[in-house]
Amino acid sequence: MIVVFNYKILLVASPIAFSVVSTAFWLTRWEIIVWGKQFFGVPSIQNRKEWIDSPLAPFKRKDGGYPVFTVRTLAVNALGIPTVFFLGALAAMQFIRRATLY
View 1 (cartoon, rainbow, N blue to C red):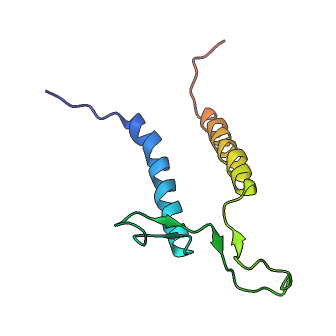
View 2: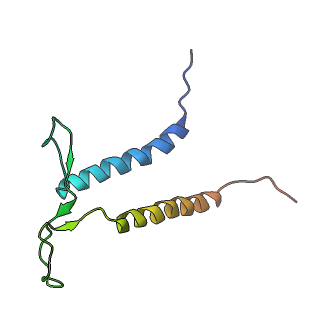
View 3: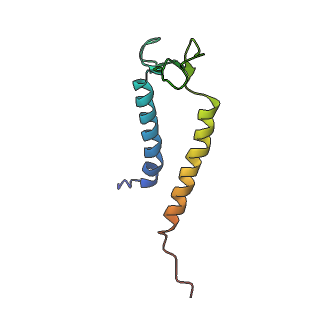
């Protein structure tokens, strides 16, 4: 029995896996996701972060810090991710060979 590997599954799954791993890494590094503090190995998400004071707006800061995930975050991702896929599809179409029409 010959097993044929379907590369299309890899093409779809690899960017998703890369984005999940990259997001988890950076949110852990920025201490937004804390692993294993509540339950055994289950991450807890802290949506507020105390950032380092900057001279731009050092007054009237909120006590609990600023939220990390906001509506703006969702809007940027909702617009940016499909845009990148669309531009990638346009770029890929430049290399498709078609039959000669004339």
